[in-house]
Amino acid sequence: MNAEPVYRRVVLKLSGEVLMGNQPFGIAPEVLPVLAAEIADVHALGVEVAIVIGGGNIIRGVAATEQGLDRVTGDLMGMLATIVNGLALQDALEKRGVNTRVQTAIEVRQVAEPFIRRRALRHLEKGRVVIFAAGTGNPFFTTDSAAALRASEMHADALLKGTKVDGLYTADPVRDAGAKLVKETDYHYLLEHGLKIMDAAAVSLCQNSKIPIRIFNIRVPGNIRRVVLGEDVGSVVRVK
Image (cartoon, rainbow, N blue to C red; front, side, top):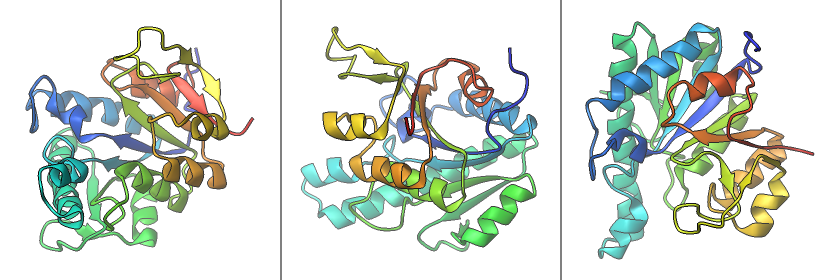
């Protein structure tokens, strides 16, 4: 078993739903310590870790639009939700002794740093975990797109996509019992088949930057560490 990380620097994409646990919405208090411990474990291996977090456990812009809100307003509310999640995760990580910075794409200077690329790189080089919140700062762009953008800007070795399923499937395995797990493929496969594991803009950006996407079940304890150590966990999307 490989005891050395195969990645020097990673961007971990976490959906807001990861923080819900078994609750219908919000942040489950029992989830944060477990998640923080897993991230701290990877950080202790010497891996530079940046995190892009979503806000779907609080509000999703698209869902808000379906309820009658203007799309831009809904997306702005969603960005604020990611900041709430980022601060909660920062608190949990710092309780584990991990120095952490939250940077946001929209300015809320009283609670977090504005996103400044060179400052973020310096934080990573100094061994701090950086949490990127507020997506790209623009409506109509998902946090998956933000994760691909930040991974490109940070020159990450991989984008780690934590999900609630075991990897990339040919269809939604929750709805389609015949869906098959795809262990390894390229970016074209995701785009051609319209798979919803990440949006097309995010996939295209990773393709252009040649950043591999590792897709795995975040709910299985120890999986983040296994992925970073190069074990055969989940699926990988990369240049073939």
